[in-house]
Length: 104
Image (cartoon, rainbow, N blue to C red; front, top):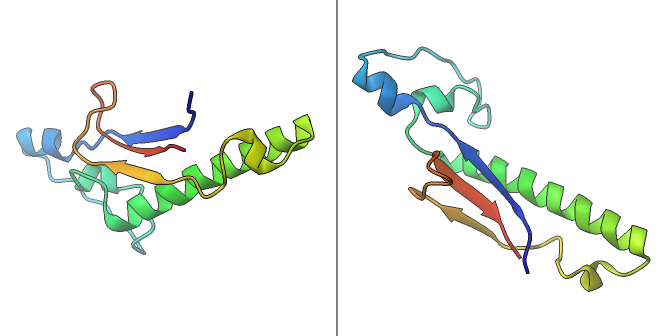
């Protein structure tokens, strides 16, 4: 059995386009992606990178805590903090948006 995290974002740009609504949003830097769900139709490279880092951080923290609580090594937990991240573009996650997943 494997475990991991997934993140999805409901990109609304397509819906807004159908309603002829032009979203106005400003992002100061490429990693400031809060407006991207309104202005984009999919994850940007920077958004994927930031989401991957967040998922890796969560997994590493949980694996470290489980190992400490059980008195075993991180390797014995069955995951490593360098678990691979798979990006699934255009793949619906329960019918909602694209998904990024962190899997062993």
